[in-house]
Image (tube, rainbow, N blue to C red; front, side, top):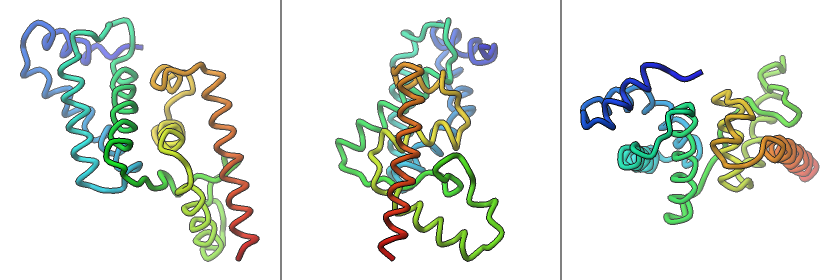
Length: 184
């Protein structure tokens, strides 16, 4: 379902009312910043990349086809820009969501807080070994609650491919956590 308010603002920007773009930025800047920050773990870098994303959105808004959801289009630009900036800047990335655990369970369901802290440390170490595109997929799916279908549109991959990648990432994390636990 398309957001009518987004479409109204987009049409105004396309018609030359550039002040309407501020409503779009206001609505989506926190969402975009949060996704980028969880990947790069540097406030300054996340702010720079977020600004770059909105500059790209502004410059290419005429190309936005109104048959799609604006947020999906925006996420796609955020996805491509973040990965591009990571490659350009050689930035390090960090884990995105401490509540993730392979198999879809949450560490927060654990009663023993000491065990939970240990598991979180293992998860953090394991996630640091993931490439940025996998971190981004996890962010979209587990943190932002994006559907596999939306992630498919954002990442320009098939729905099946996204499902397979998420499954493989969870498996990879599970194996890495298991390895880390055995090494201790």
